[in-house]
Length: 177
Image: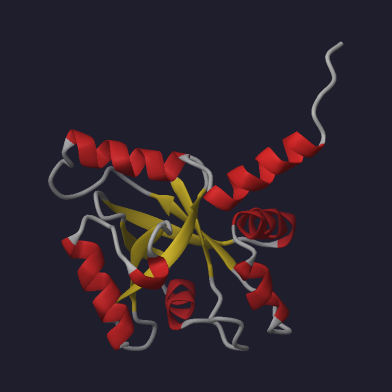
């Protein structure tokens, strides 16, 4: 818990930028309502952009057999808040199922193979949750530079994915016709 608080404080103090193990990662703060307590709980999570108005988060507890508390909170109350460091959104959570879940998880693994390691540690299928934006951002308008940095982070593919695609293209160049 203290670790999460430190990450949350650093995230909020630096417009979404943090160091340590999350340095360079796409990070958001998800605030859910406690399933039993009804109180707000904020958790830092790595996310995967999925279009302009949706973000994907993986409900892995590091490969543990139980899902994280934030996942149980979203099952009880799918409405939550996401902070990006620049913008704050209200979201509605949807647990992805079947082929849609599998495709989203494969995309996450393509960008970061660590997700596959977590899945391999557990017999349960690691849930993928889509966080759909339900309205305009709240709070003060971000400065032009901060907003552009956020937009770049959302739209850019993860570095590992770019490198993998570049290596694949180099290995199999297209022939001119």
